[in-house]
Image (cartoon, rainbow, N blue to C red; front, side, top):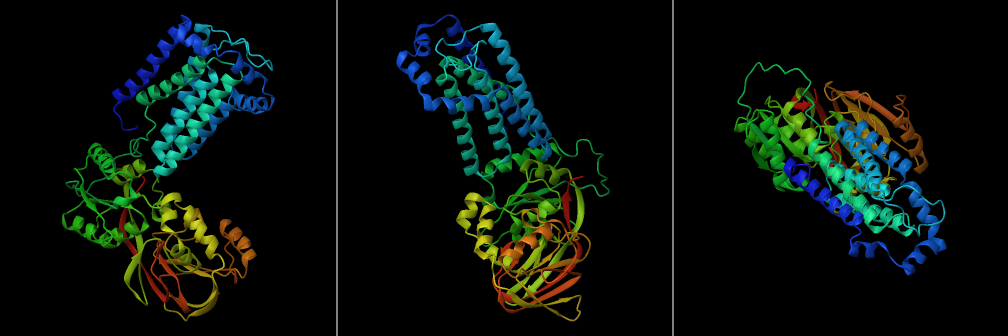
Length: 524
């Protein structure tokens, strides 16, 4: 919808307005078939007015979606969009609702149709009936929600659920107006056509899509002019339509002055390493990677030290590296940052251990409870509900048994601890935005370690409180360490993870921070 040419959107809006005009003409001229539809007859009239148990919910719907209720709903959407950084989307919502309200009022006065004579005797309305204000406002608001869902929600299942909810809401409000006798059927039909038409018209004239974050910024210095060769590494299962994603990137790249992208699709056998190597060998000036934290980790590790900047398009469930770099989660905005942002040198961490090949991580490594969560995630549930799958796995693993661990920092003498989980982080914020390592920075050349040991189920409450408030004092419940290198040894085989990917159980992880090794694109 958002990528449709303006002429297409205008034609859709025009179709709504033409249908509205024909309906208005039929109503004002008392066209027979429509009059028969509106004059519903005594049986339905009696059922609508006199069925006592239905009267209260009908009045509740009437009040909830009246002028005050719709103003509140509009404000909620606008404020939510504004605070999330989508200012154009917020303005789009306000424009649609304001224009719909003004148009409805003007048309009511112009047509001058009276209310049905059988309307519910409780609080009889004497204002004009055509078109229905309730119907036009809920249809316009629903259309705004549909546009924003298409714009921001990636999962097709969630989008379908949202579309269904909007459709049900519109039908309920429209049925309420007819059942209370406040409006004829043609009144609510006209209101829906008006609301949808206004939403489409405003969409054609004012796009809610964000503009480039670099529009008002000074041009970045370019001491080494390049051919602006762009390569993209894409995990195809992380986008709903590969073709649509490629078209979006190509269009935005051309607008930003980059060459036509060369595409590298990851596979199960190669999650990104070979694709990043091919891009580097081909002389890429920028590599964009779209995928989850695992794909991002593979590409960053391969391009470390090459001087080739990496643009991150977060398309996974956690997207921890993107979150910690302030890369927006909205795909178009992330593409914009990748193409027009500034380069930042960040650390990566070399890691080894028993039973695993030498590897790297960008965000965190863990042993214990956090790794058990990753290990226990049901992939089918994850595909359907996203991050909620981690919550379900966490509830099952919350009393993961404590283990005895030895931790050595910068080659010093090991210290012994009891822990349910040990997390070594390169960033401060982990899952769900939790500030587990509040002093960590991704470019400070050091690693931050947190050791958690809640003794029982209730101990998780003060632990969570201390973490959320960023309390820095340490004890047996929460302990912290920092250093350039860290070695963690467990007394028994324990689940382990790197950047949210389970790497199997083991007894040891050896980690060393490689300072400023990777260039990534971040917002200006």
